[in-house]
Length: 366
Ligand SMILES: Cc1ncc(COP(=O)(O)O)c(C=O)c1O
Image 1 (cartoon, protein in one colour):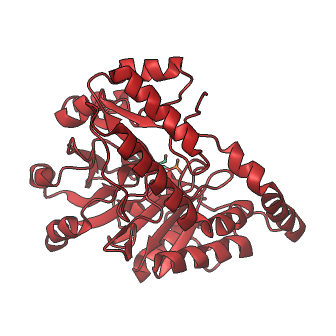
Image 2 (cartoon, helix red, strand yellow; image 1 turned 135 degrees about the vertical axis):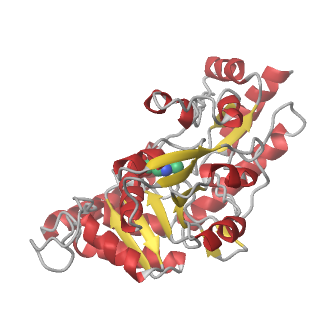
């Protein structure tokens, strides 16, 4: 049996009529961008997170950009960014004119290494982008204890961590000054197109983001009080996301079941595995690590089993940054990039498919 890395068409098949009725509702309303569908989603998402404001935007990259701008980050400033993340975390810093400064990662968690914070901070550090990569939450208490006394803003990149929480209650994105979500279709909460959101309890950040989202003109049309651009969300995506939000906890539960099945099935093999399922990890990705990564990936591909690498090149080693002589500055991330492998994990995956992947990995090591 072949197993796809991800198959979004299964969810569409199961909910086709509901999705089409939202599309029809939007068509009939004549309001195609922002409007009541997006507002209803913003309210539902804020209430789900237990946060004061959720501001829908066009995608996760723009959520980060708007958040950085709202914090007043710009030329002359530095933002600490983990060396293992999707490029957008760093790219959005560059969009403001500020400079990303990379922090190495911990090879067990693949998350930023808290013990290295003091090595990368400078008087120019204005913020730290904390990425809850793969759905796994960073120790936010430790981050805040370090950043708050220094007046460094904490931006949570929650693009992969919808519904992850600390202590069973503090949701990803609501603990730092601002949280930035992506609703790219493959995310744990995905749109049927592009989408993102900035979440915060801070009145000033919320008001700035709303203004930035509409060309710096929040309340009075064509009166532009600050620099902004077009970061609006389309109405159809607001409607789809409001509906899918109702399914988020159920699909997280399924992700946990799959992660636990992998953990039991892969135990004892010479690979490093993610932690057991818990509130802190919503398994956007199931990432294992082995020195024989490329051969394992090839072996799985021959069996028809999809896999992926998140991410194959550490961010400081990317050509866009090597011109700044950053290559190799985060050796753990550089090495990790050659060892990590994401196995298939999506809520519509069957147990038989999970078992097929387990059998494939076991066969490789036998
Ligand atoms: C960690 C991380 N940050 C930011 C983004 C950017 O989100 P988007 O693709 O919606 O712009 C993504 C999405 O891939 C991501 O995984």
